Image 1 (spheres, one colour):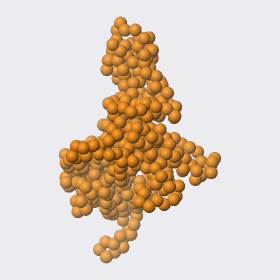
Image 2 (cartoon, rainbow, N blue to C red):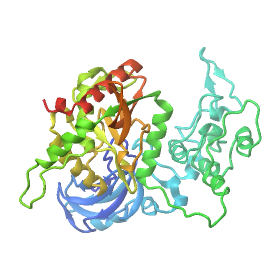
Image 3 (cartoon, one colour):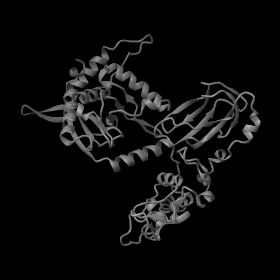
Image 4 (tube, rainbow, N blue to C red):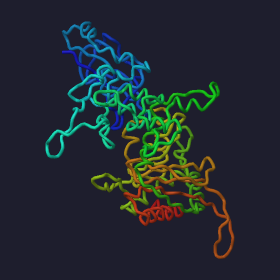
Length: 466
């Protein structure tokens, strides 16, 4: 029996991926465990291993295809004795046209339980469509309001595909005039809304600049509306890649749903810089004559943050709606800037590792991050993060927390400043750091304890060694 090969979900948040390269061709024999393709996610390029044996009868999605939905059929394998040509001829064709922008409605949605439907199919009544009338609490049939398709002022009826497209395009579903059964919002309505059409009267007036009494806030500006503000030819259009879209979605969600407060403190790193120079000077050499390690200030920051979380365990937490997760170890994410976005590889159990081990591990993670070779478990999760812009001369800044973490430390440049000691003005090397905290999980006083514990450690690096 022929077996469908589906686009895998290589991370919990993955909804789409790019089929970068096929390593097998049609007609090749496949064994379980063979690497048959390379799948590119928003963060990394992963090898896809076959779990079934047989013959690769048909490649449904050609290599180079972008934005292939999770659980979409990408190829077909036939078992021994089956007619590979017949199975290949019966393969689905829609996936081969995924690069056509006007065919978005034909893409499978992320959930395997809800198959994708073309616009004409969505316009027909189906068992999943809302019924024309609702029942009141007493069980009698209640009359349908004129705007029943939108569920009155609270509930919005929309197809799963329409919801996903609206989320990706930043379109407010409550402002879209549905054209499906009983006013249901379907995929083509989202395309109309993106160009400023197909909006409810109040939303249309708001997007045009006219006030509407009692109306909801105007939906996000569409691409067409934004482009209309600039002279044609005065800009270049650079399409978003998967990483940039994911960064935008996650950070927008974090700033909208997470009540955040900030704590800033100055740290005297004079002892740290002296210790760093002495340790690096004493580093041994490898067989090629290169130092076995070269510590950076950021290595000390990672270690100090990890130990501070161990000393203030109530702050080493993640918020969930059902419970608080208290982490036993300090898994520290470290922001790495890439030409195509940002990623935070994680130093696991950083509190247990030496400074030299942290330094070497961080160099390896950063190199593989830039090559998009990190595995999902190397950048997902974590209990807190560090973002350092000191190398750019930034004095201080605030960083956005990376969910599900509850804190992040923003590190500025170490610089000489005048300070007062024993009544005398003297120079000192000062580094400003700002701790961002999720107020749902970390209260103000607890956050202050955490950043104070960090300050004590970073100012006395010998405490990180004993």
